[in-house]
Amino acid sequence: MNTRRILVVGIDGVRLDLLPSLHTPRLDEVAAAGFLGRVEIDAATPTMSGPCWATIVTGVSVAKHGIWGNRFDGHRLDVFPDFTTRLAAEHGRRTLAIGGWTPMFLAREGGPLFTAPSRLSYIAPTADTPEGWEDCDQAVADEAARVLATIPDLDAAFVYFGAVDETAHFLGCGPEYRSSAETADRRLGQVLDALRRRPGYAEEEWTVIVVTDHGHRDEGGHGGRSEEVVTAWIAACGPDIPAGPAPAGLRHADVAAHAYSALGIAPDPHWSLDGQPFTAAAVPA
Image 1: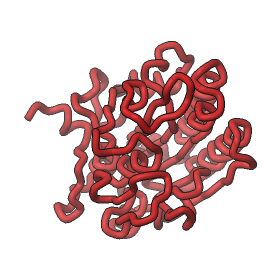
Image 2 (image 1 turned 45 degrees about the vertical axis):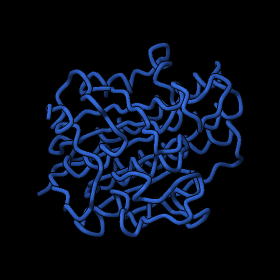
Image 3 (image 1 turned 90 degrees about the vertical axis):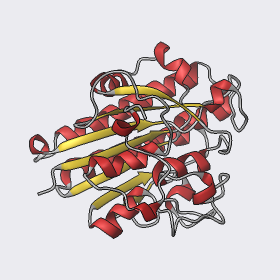
């Protein structure tokens, strides 16, 4: 019986340099049990949500997955699929992807990024505003918590929250942005609490990864190479992740690579992954 499980929670657009001033106890909980580390978006990757999330969930660079902007036309996801799709198609694992950003989950704007997980839930925001996205993210958290707490054979899940990024675009990185990030942390906690309500949780070994795609300028917006924009982060804990300093040289592509490793799956060389498990990254070459 497989007891290993993986949960990846993506929170869009959260600046690393602001985290110390925010009340984020659930993210802190993950970091204390494992690590929280800096990711620098490489020069070849546009600092936009589409390319960054594609690298996070496929484990390969933009040159391979072919997503260069927030439209996904011309992608190569048939060759380099997201981890929820590959796990379902090639390893018979039960997987979930849920969120509200259209090209991630629907066949629109060149999508979907998540092509064929076992279970996909798309919850559209009522309006493309901070308030509309807050409502959307809460509905995502509610549904993710329900599924995670009640589906016994679920092996891997990706949950996406987009309100923090939307708030920055409309209002900059001021009080509303900080409040949105703290609300996202509460939703992270709702999802983590749902894991612990699973009937078989005591026998399961969960790895939890929380990741952001890019930062924002103070006035809101991204896409350039300023320090606050190119700096992202990963927090993770699990049975293969010792508590302590983050591995050196963390990359977005390491998330998918560690997702496979956490489930005991050795990547096929033909997958051509650019990332490596966090535990491998921690070992000096």
